[in-house]
Amino acid sequence: ETMGSRKARLKPHTKDSCLIESDQFGRTEVIDNTLNPDFVRKFVLDFFFEEKQNLRFDVYNVDTRSSNISKHDFLGQMFCTLGEIIGSTGSRLERTLSGIPGKKCGNIIFTAEELSNCRDIATMQLCANKLDKKDFFGKSDPFLVFYRSNEDGTFTICHKTEVIKNTLNPVWQPFTIPVRALCNGDYDRTVKVDVYDWDRNGSHDFIGEFTTSYREFSRGQSQFNVYEVTLLSFKVESEYTFVDFIRGGTQLNFTVAIDFTASNGNPSQPTSLHYMSPYQMNAYAMALKAVGEIIQDYDSDKMFPAYGFGAKLPPDGKISHAFPLNSNSENPNCVGIEGVLEAYFQSLRTVQLYGPTNFAPVINQVARCAEDVTDGSQYFVLLMITDGVISDMVQTKEAVVNVSAYRVCVCGGGGEAHVYLTHHLCVIPFLTGSTARMPIPPPQSWAFALDLLYSSNTVTIFINGPRRSVPG
Image (tube, rainbow, N blue to C red; front, side, top):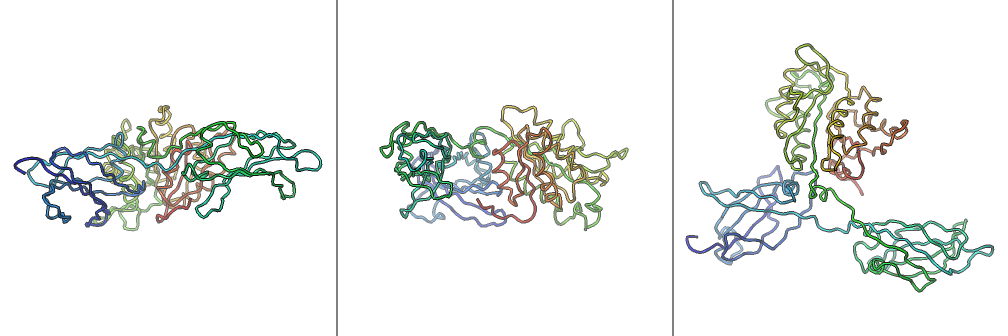
């Protein structure tokens, strides 16, 4: 407008990466007479780490009351992914608007916040006094059973305490329970607690019951009138999610390792997994691009160390199992996923595929980088892509045990290795002196892998085959 200010409206869209058309998922309110609108309306989106969720934001100047957007003046647009917003510092992203040739359209600022979904964990301890004596010989053996009320008036069991033998004045051990399990986030929902006398044959004798709620529990130590069951302590701690760590400043350091063994086939032949077709990417390039384009949104510098293993290197034909794809041993970092792909293709032209398939050297290389980070500010993700069975199983087990002292996630894909290694890694906790956590079964979803990043120090996951949902 030549005079006055604009009435601004923002129109967000979601856009599938394979489609040109976009689906509009909402519009902001209209803010009158301003060039610097601060929109109030929020938009709720489901966040899937394993997917590239493309977004488009259109800004319009509203001239009429018509809901037809074509009746209004287009001011600019911006494309990004949901991961870029969440992965930005403080989940705050500022970008330049474009879309009008030869004209500056201004900037647009986004902030993202994870919705509260009752991630608190409650810790409580209870005792009882003067309970009824149910045993003919001796006193009662009491325990508590907690039930959460359902919408239909029924109750679902959510916790049992241990049994305290031969007493009418038991003091049970403190226990923890997710608040969502106790009341599904409804602080006033009825919680029923039954008191039983334990019997060896399973026909436990009912002593009594009382009802309360999370809100009453959270008020602290109190006394319930039925059989004088007393709440001794109650505290709540938050359970942190992946997004919480990212918002807190944790950076993902993504490292790639590619199998250059001869079992992949001659790269000059179309049957090879390393074949560089002028028409489409090979299997290794597709895996790199699919995973890398997602995880790079959470790596601020977009510098990715990339290694190869199982090849003979020029000029002397020395076999290496941790050589930098960019041929720079001092700085193996590649700029973005495109830089990794470029270095990968260049290595295919210069090295000779050989063998064997050794994993341990690359895992140890990442461990050396991770051991310098002790403040939790960085999390290391190693993606190993291979086509065959691992040759150095004993050394790989030891490497995984050693790396368990640091925050490292080892992920792999392709061939028989993901089944073979996962099966053999199950014996790691039995290694002498090992304090490593038991590796988990291999899910088929990258999303599930990343959900587990912060559940333990080291998670070893092997991904292969089509994406499918993981129950639970």
